[in-house]
Image (cartoon, rainbow, N blue to C red):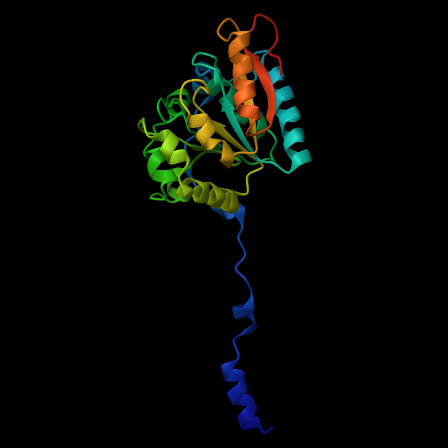
Length: 256
């Protein structure tokens, strides 16, 4: 083979770097998110004791965090739905405190989505104005980097600007599954918490369960009856594992 032939072949061959696959860096994606950080006074007002650690109850959420992450790690899971039998049990309160407890572990990435579409509350609790609708995000109309808000370098929220009454149908759409898979691929979170509506109110939770790995049930002391708790466990455990039942608003220590 002469020099001219060698030159021609090299021109046809791609440069070595062109053959290399694109490398995705989740840190770069996290850094691209909009930032809104509530101050300690706002977090304290929202009773997010895990962030301020100014209330003895934070220890209970630390315990819940550690046991939850251990269970997820043992099973290779990341996605947890947080629900309650009925309204008034404090499942959103538990979701936020668990999220902030997990975020204190610097190497743990946590994402929280407000999926109580009929009555969203996380934005108001955090004193962060939600700019977009969760339905638009789940339908693929908004890119995750334009929708998610980071309150810390390892904690991001998907908030909902307005309620919707078609949540059960939205949760069963193929696009919702695709959007959640994309979120996992881009952010590579260690924990994804879905703040869900009450399990006995509508079929929203049942409709969404195929998208999660397990469920955490929050029962309200003085609110939830033993019959309601048993009914929720029976209904949900037929679809996904239940990690535990947490008693909130109890006279004694929070249990798990």
